[in-house]
Length: 189
Image (cartoon, rainbow, N blue to C red; front, top):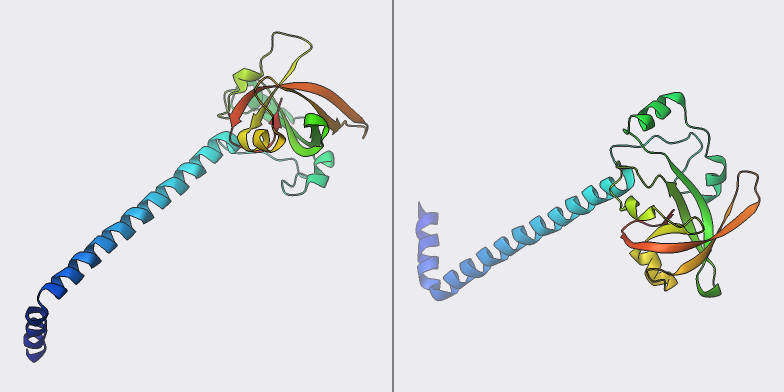
C-alpha cells in the first residue's frame, strides 16, 4: 500500500512532465506498431507478387537444375515427361526453358538469364500476351525494368542475344523489346 501511495504522490508531484511523457510514449508505441504493420504488409505483398510471377502454383525442376549455378544450366534440360505433358495439355502447367546467355546492347556485352515461354500460357502472371508477334522475322522479348535501366534499352529497341544450343555451339538472334514491366530478372522470349 505504501508503494501505491508513493507512486501517486510522484505522479501528482511531477504534474505536466508525467502527462507529457505518457503522451509521447503512447505516440511512439502507436508509430512503432503502424510502421511494423506497414513493413510486414509490404513484405507479404512482395512475396505474393514473386510467387505469382516466378513460381505460379509451384515448380517441377530437372534433377540437374540449380538456380544459383549458371554453369549448370546447360546440363539441366530434358524432354518433358509424360506426366508433365498431361499437365501442360490440361493447361495446369507451362514449360519454361531457362539458359544463360548474353545480350549486346549498344555493342556492350551483358550476361542475361534467357527464358523461353509459351505466349499463350495463363499460369504465370506475366504479360506473356506481348510475346505474340505477327511478323515472322521479329522475335519479341520481355525484360525487367532493372535490366532495361542497366542496359539502357527502351521499348521497341532491337538487341542481339547469344546463347549456346544443345550441341554447345553459340547461336545468336536479334530480339525486339516489346514489354519492360516484368519485375523479375531475365529475358523472356
